[in-house]
Length: 266
Ligand code: NI
Image (cartoon, rainbow, N blue to C red; front, side):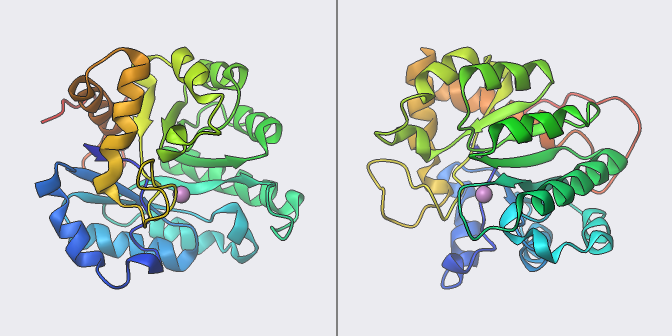
């Protein structure tokens, strides 16, 4: 299993981070991407990737933290070993106390430009900002990546798929209020979907309320597999290969202008 979005740098894992991470391969979780949300958490994600062979890092500023944007530092971090994406970046209009929308948009554009320059995929966070997110993504036609915890409509999913983006799903699809999810997932081709936990958040039913980690990932792809009419094993294999295709196109730390080389799972 490939958990394409888990925040093991988060303080929720301070008591047992190394124990949980070290135990994941035995639980069937062979790959993890840890996306940073601040400069400090991006640095921590890079350090965890250096320590654990099955962990990779993404670096970037989450929209909630975009007032701290220091472009040189993100650019510098993005060139460290095992950094496979810029993220998580995006727009979040949900919380009133978040930075002003204009600032969120400016920092997002600068981070998308950095992804383009470094030829890295992007991990995109969009909460209650679907229209502006889509408009800004369109300004960067060379940039690809994943809309994580996708919460938009079928129409938006179709637009993003046309633009070459992937969509990823987590425990939120198991919640009772996830009314749009089955319809959206029906519209997403198998080769364009990924799974994630967003640990320590969004623990799937029936474990809701506990701290989330990658060991709860099966709950997510069992739900996806049911909706797609596949076995959980098939869904695990497909999402593993999709994650590798997006994030592990190149040997770690190597940037190249060559077209993406498809790597086989194994
Ligand atoms: Ni996240």
